[in-house]
Every structure is written in structure tokens, then in C-alpha cells.
Length: 241
Length: 212
Image 1 (cartoon, rainbow over the protein chains, first blue to last red):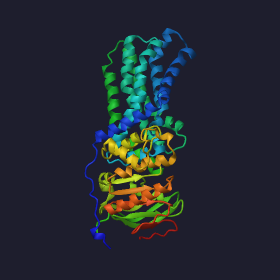
Image 2: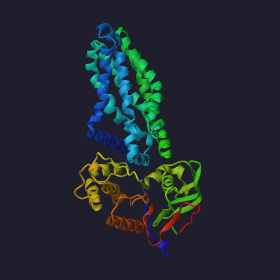
Image 3: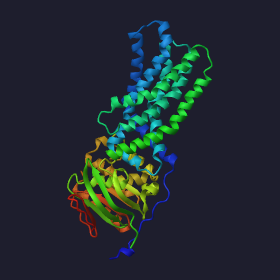
Image 4: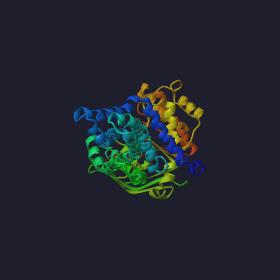
């Protein structure tokens, strides 16, 4: 045997940096989403539809809408994020991209964070941008609209981050939709309470600094903990797949 | 004798209360091609996913370069390329974009090299066509283009010959042989009758396993 003279490939001791890898994941997700624009519009249209239902179904009175407007917009935003969550990992799971993601040498939770951020840019951010228009529709005053946008700007990333845990956990299931909602909605409740609470306080002329700081704390908590949980859940889902 | 890249000691895997294999021990040496054989459902893919680090439901020990793999996961991932039967090709992206995305997390490869790799797998002229417009075999070839630029010493390939035509199959065989000659280690699962000089075989199913 000539085993001794066989060449041996050198092992690699360097790899692509974490930031470059995160950028790669982020860029691919955006590119895929823009190739399928109708999917991008769905959560937005859903958001608009749900908000329109309230004046039609409950009451078009200015007093009612001004009172309930912020809550309606928050609930509608929450539901549209929930609606889009199933897509977060599903396509990647089906075509094998997720396996390759898990096998990248960089820490998985950071790659998952990049994916979740892409999800927010594609669903949460457009909702925030659309909010002023719908805010005018439900007769909110300028100050309330501003605060509402701020709370949604801080709150929707939290929704995406918490949602990513549920999406990762239900990945192995055939029809994950309802279970995903049941898992995630209870975790959304604190964000909803503080989000709408902030707007209500602003409408009464109170200082909202403390409320906004609390929402910021939610965001920091979700940013630091949710990616770990999602990464672990992804490993479990893939291990069973 | 060179040190084995990956060593399996007494692997046992159970799936749905059925033991797929037990007491499975083998070494993957640099410069060898290893073929995992066995009938459908004998656990070939499961074994490969275990080796790749995707499946954690097993007992036994896996050593990477002589040390426990779980203690050096990053080194292991950096030096291992896994191609599953779902190869991670996005139908909405073009072969170029797919290849760029797949390699960008491991080592940045300049575009001309990627383009050349795609030409090398017979996709010349298709580099910028969305993958959903390509045939199943062509989509597999996009994934296989990674083998032309990959420099990971250990390759784990699950059913590489699926949907590939006769010319492609012989090209892959040559590639694997070249790879082994360069000092890389390759583990393949296939139903295709792969014959190579010095090939190691791991036979699953029927509870028996042998080396060489």
C-alpha cells in the first residue's frame, strides 16, 4: 500500500467572518422576497383590510375610532406579522437551504438573527410606514400617530423575534398555522399591552418616555434571547426531519 | 498511515423504535472514497446526516481528528461539506446567485470562478436563468458545482447521482477519484454501482457492517 505517500489536504483554520455571513443571509432573503413581490404585499393588504373592518363592522363614529384606533392598528399589525411567520423558515426547510445554514461554521443564532431581521424589514417595517395613512383613517391626531409609529417601530421587531421561536419549533409539522398562533399569541400580549398603553398615555397628554423605555427593554430582551431559542429549535426540527 | 479525519465508534441509531444500526465503527481517512450501501430505509441518509452533524439522535462516539467532535464543532463545520438530497437551491434565484449565496458563508469566491464552475457542470448559458426554469438534473448540477470550488477536506454526499445523466455520472466519478488522489476524503451514499480502486464500503441493513 502506498498510504504513506498519499497527500493530505490541509485543514482550514479560517473562515468567512460572522458579519459577512450575516450579510450574505440577509441579502439572499431580501433577493428571494423581491423575486416574489405578491408575497410581500399580502401582510400589508391584510393589515389594511383588518383595520377597515372596524369602521364598517362596529361604528364609523369619530369618537369610537379615536378611542379604539391605536388598539385596532396594533392588533392588525400583530396579526399580519403572525400571518407571515410561517414563511420565515418554511421555504428554506423545504429546499434544504436551512440544512446548509445550520452547517455554516458561524454561530447559528447570529445567522438566525440575520434572517429574522430580513423578515422584519420585509413585513414589520412596511407596516410601520403604512401606519400614518391608516392612523388618519381612524381619526387619530398627529401626536398619537407619531407615538403609535414609534411603538410599532420598536414593537414589530419584537414580534418578529418572538415569532421566529414559534416558527422554528413548528417547522417539522405539516400544518403549523394554528399551533403557531396558539404558541405565539400569549407571548405577544405584553408587547401589545405596552404598545397600546403608550399611545393611550400620549393621547391623555402624559409623558411617554418611561413607556418607550420599557418597550426598548422588550426589544433588547428579545434581541438577546430569541435568536438562541430559535437556533436551538431549528436544530431540533432538523434533527427530526 | 495518516490520521483519520473522522472516526466513528460504536454508533447506534434508533428511529421510530427500530434500530437502524448498532456497533457501527469505521474511520474516514484522507485520500479515500467511502460508499455507504444498503437497501431503502436502511439508514444511509440518517448515517450521513449524523456524520454531518444535522441529526443528534444517536449514541456512540464521533471523533474529528482524534478528538471528540462535539468539543470542536466549529473546526469540524469549517472542514466539512455536506450535500443532501435537498441541496439548498432556491428556485427563484439564478444558478449564479444560488452558488454565491451557498459559498458566501464558507469562503468568498470571486464571480468568474463561480461562473467557470457552473460551466464546468454543463450549465454554460444557464448561469443567469432562474432555477425554477431548469430541469431537475440541471438543478442538481447547480449544487454539484460547489464540488468544483470546495476546498473542504471532507465531503459528505447524499445520493449525488440522482437525476444526473450518464455523462454527468462519469464526470462525478472522475471528480471523486481526483479528489481522493489530492488527499480529500469523500463519503457517498448511492444506489448507483460505484466502483473505484481502494473504495471503502459501509454496508447497512441486516444488522451487519464491515469495513473495506
